Image (cartoon, rainbow, N blue to C red; front, side):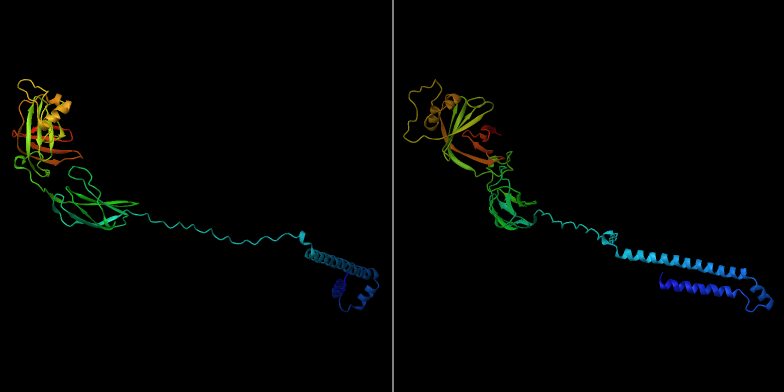
Length: 357
């Protein structure tokens, strides 16, 4: 037992004795003192009780001290326990930073189609195929094209563009209107057009004024020497200006399957060539054609069999012709006056003909 425990026990005994004495009167009368002295059992009992109490107090103190010592020893043992037996400290909670907010990618602006700011011609009233200068301004174009449909309804020939696509010009000689401009890039195209008032260069021959096609611009009128000869199934016409012989078949004759049709041949007759074939003898009232007509008739079986014999000798004179263009590459037309004063309307695409009016 340590010194501190013994000291504590002694102090407790002193306190107990003092408490026991305090319970007795300070000076008893003589008679009472005699009684007390003559009563040894009572005194012994008191001492015994005091001693017993002291022993119990000492045991209690020792028990308390022992418990305190054991607690101290346990604390010391805990303090020096091996690291492996210690409970690992709870990890300190750390705040998790919030997930970064996804930033959407910057939207790339889609390319836009070009824009035409201005498109004009240096003049709006022109004669057919007169020179016109076009100019325009635009934005965002990679290429430029100027185009229109000609008097035949076909796309005009490609036009050369001067300058850049957004600030360009072009020189044209149109025979029809409107004129279109197209600017293009990868995103699309823009279109604009200008209207031109196109006047015909040539007027219609007086005999043709008011014809069903008078709204179209005619070509130059042709005045020329001509020759003509009738046949059993049609007739031939020669025009000096072209050196061309045209065979007009009646309906169902020669190559004509339905209505009247025509075929044209170059005049290959030259002065000094035989004018006819003396071995060919026509029936009465019929004639063998001569010179250019005769050469075509004798050398082409389709012509000979389709037309038959000539019914009269050929005649010569002057005549005129005037044509115009229609819709389509080969869709052209000609008005021709024959030497009998009749006007023939010829459709070149179909190679058919009829009298007008």
